[in-house]
Length: 390
Image (cartoon, rainbow, N blue to C red; front, top):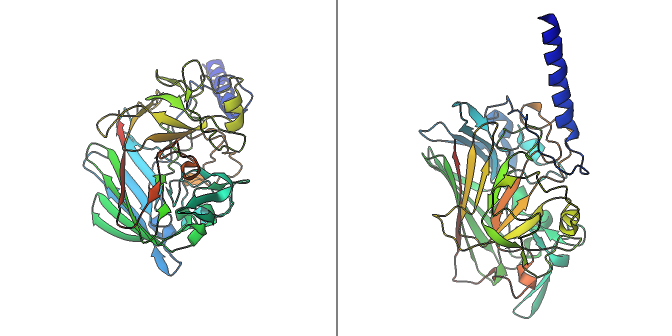
């Protein structure tokens, strides 16, 4: 019996080492079959989110439903901090990455965990665009481009918050004319609603007093094995898209729509995220993995445009949206260098994925893409739903 126990311990250590080595970007198939869900299953202490920033109170708000799900949201950046849903055994499992205090969300280089992204989600080439004959220059915060609104993006702003019910939170932010280089005073409202069917509905609205561009999304980092688990390459993904947008080396779309068939970007049939991620492919090289916008097939809010499953926890995520595009990001820039995630967890390379519903990157500069222009008198309105089941 003692020898058997030693053998089991050796096998367990070997498995752990294999999972740790899975972060090597040179691997051809990053799928890990023995990934275990995290043991950290709690909402962070709300006291760690109490602060006075930008002349407003920062707090942590909790939404609950009758089906065992809990969502924690801070009005700093409108961020999803925790999202606990039941797994196949009924155990509450936190499926998004985040931090235990508001201070951690303020650190330099923080990867937008759970944040509302605005005014413009994704990239704008060289931070430039023209509206009504006038040229605008935005913050350059991503190489030669603007990413996620620049240095003054919504991810670092304090939203006015109103908890409408035990399962609904309304957040509002007024972005002043010229903030980040964008024209117009833009009033943005985001309502989070936790349904009893374990769906998280995100409803975005915005109005402006001057013609501007807007493209709002949420930057949740998911791991259906549990936040803090070492990989998402074993999560099984399907995307209802026959084409994607190839990008240049700075991750700006080339303007072409490329069919996914015959490429590593074909998720029309379910496969593990890691199946083709190590393929020798120019686009995977440019993105250091998947970091591309998928051109969604015809859909509405009754049709899931993406489905992800974990064979570890049995949790399934379905994504519904009114948006034309979906940015799929495979966590290529996560490093796990620090253990400051929730519960002291490290978040290593490819330990989370993002499914950001949005209009296309760089649309203000590419006439063939659906317009992101918002004019006075118009209302920007879009809905995305993340629904969990087991």
